[in-house]
Structures are given as structure tokens and as C-alpha cells.
Length: 116
Image 1 (cartoon, rainbow, N blue to C red):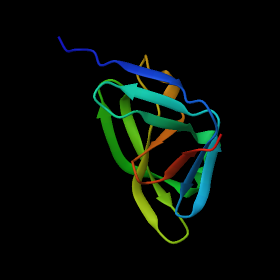
Image 2 (image 1 turned 180 degrees about the vertical axis):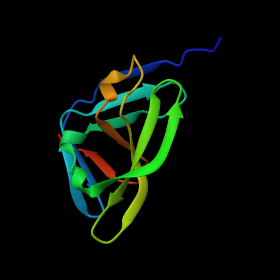
Image 3 (image 1 turned 90 degrees about the horizontal axis):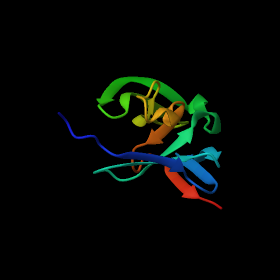
């Protein structure tokens, strides 16, 4: 029998600005912070608060036994396309359903700043 990984999800207080390739691609006061044993905390941004016109769905998928299947997205800017910079759990497993409809980003792919 496997060991259950502890995952905590909480509101990330404040207003967050998300920038990539020299442009603001989102801002939100509704970010979620996911903490999972053995990993750095990850900020999840609601899709409604991102400029989704800049994102193209990738063919890449991965599976997490604790969160479910992740779908990846490319970021298509004016001058370049950054591959698989974001991921989303379209139908997350029970216990982490809050992250449905949110995107998380690879480190260094975008700049996320707490602005207030």
C-alpha cells in the first residue's frame, strides 16, 4: 500500500502580475498556492485572468498519481513560441479539484510578481 502525499491548496493573498516576452499576459487576485510534499510550492492562475489568446494547447501530457492528468500549453508571443511553458489539470483528482481551470508555469517561463 502506497504512502499518501500531502497536498495543501490555499488562496495566495494579494494581486499578482504575470508577464512573458515583454508583455503582461495576466493579472489576478485569485491565485492559488499548491504545496506538495517534496516539491517547491506552485502558484496556479485562473484561466479567466490570463490572456489565453497567447496559449496553444500542446500534445504533451503527464500523469501525477496525486493530481491526475496534466495538459500542457505553449506560449505564442509576437516574436517566438515557448514550448510547454504551462500546465493545467483539466479534470483533477478528488482532493485537488480547486485547481481545475487554472494554469501553472515552469520556472523561468514567465515572471510572476506580487504587486500588492
